Length: 403
Image (cartoon, rainbow, N blue to C red; front, side):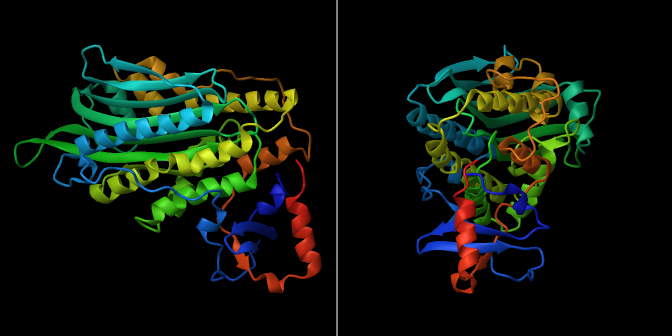
C-alpha cells in the first residue's frame, strides 16, 4: 500500500507504523518534536531477518598482510557468485556468464546477465579486474573530481569492482543498483624515496529506484544498509545517504533517479576499516532486495502502469548516459568492454512528450518524493498508550489505503 506520501515531508507531522516482534509500534514524525526524542530502531523496519556472513574464515578477505588489490578481487568474485545464486532462485533462470579480456591491454572480467527472464527483464552482475595505463581523457576526468595527477603522461593504474543493475518486469517491483570498487594509480611524480607516488581509494554504494513507491520497501532497503554501516561507524549512514541523494540527481529534470540508499567515493583513509565496511554492504545485497522482490514480483498491474515504468526507465537512461561517473570513466579507458559498461541500461524504455501524472495519482505522489528526498528512518517512537482511539483508527485506515 502507498499511504499518504506527502505526509513524509519533514515539515509535516505524520504517523508511521513499524512491525516489531512485540506487535505493532507507532511513531510520529514531527519536525516540532524535541531532537532527543526516541527513534524507531532500524531493525523494526526489516521485512525479513538478516543473514550471516558466509565468507570462509580462512579467506584472504580477512588477511591484513595481503595486498588490498588481492583481497578486493577475492571479495568481488565471491559476492558475484553469491548474488547470482540468490537471483537465480528468484527468477528461475540461469545467468549467462561471459568471460572477457581487455584485448591485451591488461586484465578483464566476467559479466553475468539474465535477459528476458521470468521475473527480471534484465539483470546484470559484472566484475572487472583491470590494469594498464590511464590515458589523458580518464586522467582529466579524475582531476575534475579533485585528483592531482599528471595529465601529459600515461599513468599506471589498477582497478577492480563489482556492479549490479536489476530491472524487473513488474512495475510494482523496483530497480536496484550497486557498485563497489577499488582503485590504485600512480600520480606521475616521484616521491622522496625515489619511487613513483601512488593514490588508492574506495568507492561504492547501493540505491533503489521504484516506479511505484511503497513506504515499507523504502524503509526496509535503507534499514538493511544502515545496520550494515553502523557496524563500522555510526556516522557513515547519514553522510552516505545524503551523498547518495545528491549524486543520483538529474538536473535537467529537477528530480532524483530513485529513493536513494547510500553512496561513498574517494575514501582513502583507513583502508582496512573501509574494506570491511564495503564487505558488509556487499554481503547485504540479497537481504536488501529479495524480500522486496518476493512481495512485488507477482502483483497485478495495468498497461498504464507498465507504460509509467517505461517512462521512469527513460529517466534511468538519461542519468546513466549523461551524468554517471562510472559510465564516463569506462568509456574513456582503452579496451573497455562496452557491452558490460552499458549493461546498466534497461532492455526497454519510453519517452513521451509532456508526460505529466494526474494530480493526486500514485504516479504523482511517487514523483513528489523523487523531487523531495525523504529520511526514511527518521521516525519517532510513540507509546501506543498515548494515542487516542481516533488517532489509532485513523492510522490503521491510512495504512489500509489502496494506491
